[in-house]
Amino acid sequence: MQGKSSRIIIIAAPSGAGKTSVVRHLLKVMPDQLSFSISAATRKPRNNEKDGVDYYFLSVEDFEARIKADAFVEWEMVYEGKYYGTLKKEVERIWSEGKAPLLDVDVKGGLHVQEKFRGQTLSLFIEPPSIEELERRLRSRGTETEESLKARVSKAAYELTFKDQFDHVILNDELPRACKEAEQLIWDFLKKSLVVSH
Image (cartoon, rainbow, N blue to C red):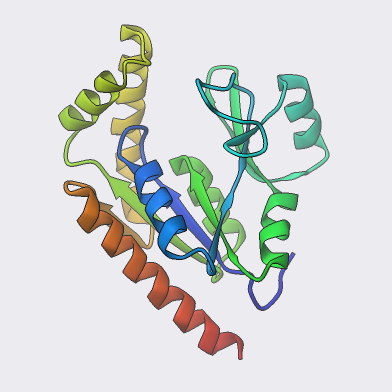
């Protein structure tokens, strides 16, 4: 599962920290270097999400069969009964295009990938300005019940304790600045790894 372009960019963050916005920016400004690694998930599609574009939406049975078949780079039961994971074939598809997969993963997933591909990854942790701000952002989405909101906030507080295990922590207090910082770190990493691989 490796070649000269076998670099992986990991973006991890608690829910509501703004990682999706950072990921969208990176894909827009670095289309020749990065490709979005589509995760597999067992949750139902939201509003305008499309299968094979936003996620590969799988049944729990299908997901568990793939776990048994060792089809994932990483997988997690993120919330009770809800699996998320990165398929090996997705990472290989992107490498075959000569690009680096951009993984938008949860914190534990990010650590697993970093562990598995030592020396090949750049891991960025997007940190919210505060837990209060994170709660405000989640609340403003209007997609959470009070109970699921509490679960996400307490999970976020727990995930923040892992931030120092990532290569870089980016504070997302101002989105344009956070995007720029992520972009610069990725350029530096890809340039450096290019030199190493030639």
